[in-house]
Length: 257
Image (cartoon, rainbow, N blue to C red; front, top):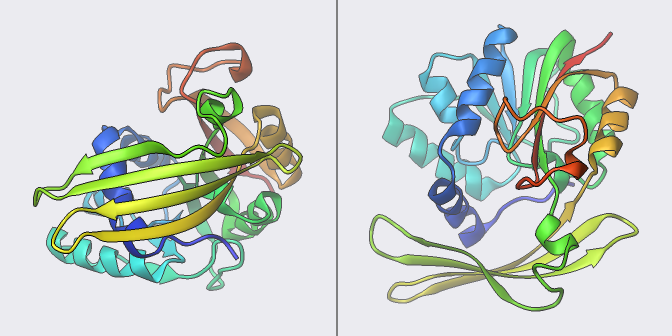
């Protein structure tokens, strides 16, 4: 099974993202969907941080989410936004309702939470119509791999002040498994208040090098159409290992027959 976000981890997830995100991925996804008209599915839609703005644009996109906590947060967000999105509960590696979609969106590094990324990609191939599009964003954990963040030491990962004045904090400690290409993370979440709230969790992030992902996509029946880094369509490079960037890689592909 894929890894869900639970409890305070789910509650603070969007706050941490929104403190650093300028909305660029929503714009990229919207432009991608316009190339593949018809019903689309965002995989790992969470509480709707990326999906719901697309719905408000009038785009035909549904969501898929494993975490019940995220689904409940999404219900609250949807009511606040005055929309009625369709969000399915299920595991991205096995879920289907028998339909074929014109496009799949897998932003925010969702694929890297799968126990078997290649098997998951093959399943996604089966969810798409022939000629349908797959939008995929992954990241390389260079800070961990290069030793900028030393192993087995706690560090402040994210901090955010919520609109109500409470302080949310994430502390992280990690270990590298080079053989399996996994970053194993321990997380400590805390939210100030009376009383304060805390939550601990573990997460395994699988890193996939650019050349490995290209080969995996080809084996799973996808044609590479476009690739760029750091959410910037102008940053098209032949080999991301030879440039200095934030480690974010976006792939836009088409399902072959």
